[in-house]
Every structure is written in C-alpha cells, then in structure tokens.
Image (cartoon, rainbow, N blue to C red; front, top):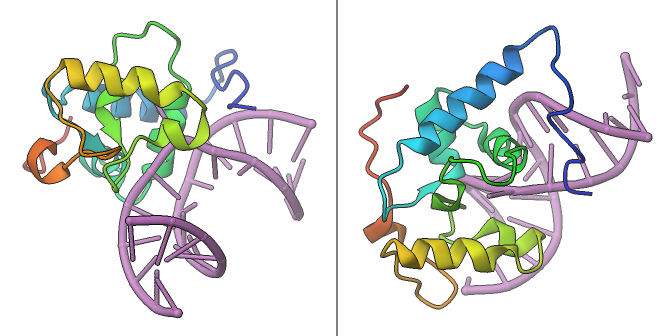
Length: 122
DNA sequence: GCAATGACGCTCT
DNA sequence: CAGAGCGCCATTG
C-alpha cells in the first residue's frame, strides 16, 4: 500500500502543503546530471533531519510531474525505489544514466555526482 | 487519540 | 559491506 492517495483533497490547514512545495522546489534545483540525498534535500529545504518527509512528499508526486524526482537517492548512493517497489528503480536508473550519472554496480558515487548545495535554501 | 506504516539517516554490531 | 536499532514525522485505520 504505497501511500494510498496521500494528496486526497485539500485540507483547511495547508501547512503540510507548504512543506511539500518547499521540498519540490528544492528538488527542482538539483542540476541535471547530479543527484541529492533525501536528507540533503530536507536540510536545504529548511527541515534538517526530516528526510522521511522528503520521501513522503516524493511518494505523493503525481505521475508525469515535472519534478526531477529521479535525482533524489538515499545517503548510501542507492535507489530507495528499488528497495521498496519492485522494478521502480529501473526507470529511475535509466533516467539518471541518460543524464550522465554513472552507476558503480547498483550504486552511485555521491562523491562525484552529489549535488553541491552551498547551504542556500529556497 | 493511539498504533502501525513508510521513496530516510545515523550509529553500532 | 550487510543488518538491526533508534530517531523523526505525516498519514491512515
């Protein structure tokens, strides 16, 4: 059960929606051919330590979104999709390789392809 | 409101 | 390098 429609209808609060937008705009800043970790996205977006929420936000992304979600991988340089969803990592890997990201086995070198953020946000 | 469930990260074994 | 434990937090039943 992959987050059954986590976006459902609008809520009166809207605060979490703001969080999602914050995360999405940060993911959009990842340069082509580079990758960022969930924790890094959370940190840059202004929510250090909330890597899980980043994954949650990405899981809520509708199919065909313009957000480059494939450039977000876990801190181990591996594709989290491959761990949870069977076959899901294949698409992500192909997208990354098409952008020039090189896989070493089933892992990406964050040392070389990691996104240098500089600590700026939004 | 509580218990269970995650596209996670870090530390210890 | 792989696995287990613990922390964090939004969403769901």
